[in-house]
Amino acid sequence: MQLLKAITMMILSLICLISCESNESFSMKEKSPKSLEVRFDIPQLLKLNITQVKERLGSPTSEFIPSAANLQVDPGMLSCLEYQNRSTSITINYSRSGKIETIFIADNTTGRKTEEILKLGNLKVAAKDYKIRVQNWINPQYAKEIGAAEIAGIEVTPFN
Image (cartoon, rainbow, N blue to C red; front, top):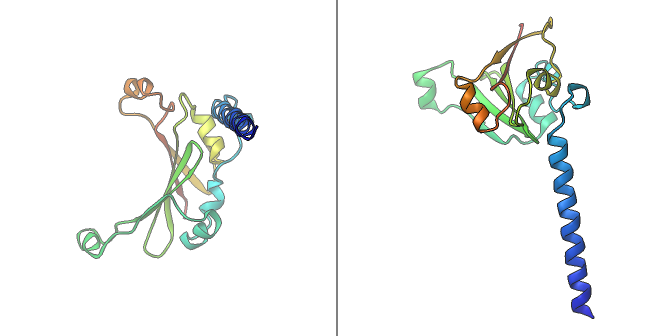
């Protein structure tokens, strides 16, 4: 009887796990930019220094801080943080003073369109506080073959 209960619980757990995974993959296939939610509020992040960004977003996925040897070669070398939220990532380049220089947003959902990535970053094409530069793929055919987004990503630079 105990064995039957254990097997039943395992089956129910597997069904629940499969259901959760299918719901997640469904949400990754959202097509309408209107149905997407903002994953990173980039205009708000641009107003912060890097310490405030870390307080707001928590621990980064990765971080690069130039060593003394790096700074001897290039005194202006920037530090970098990376954050991930589901299929969307941002890379934040910042100076030694903590000022954000650029934020690059990318998404790895197959066929994700430029306007959808703009929505994920809460970005507008014509904004007064920042400029955007769309980074196209160097080899669009290869990007399509591997199931990448329509573009490599969007670089956002503050006007200050």
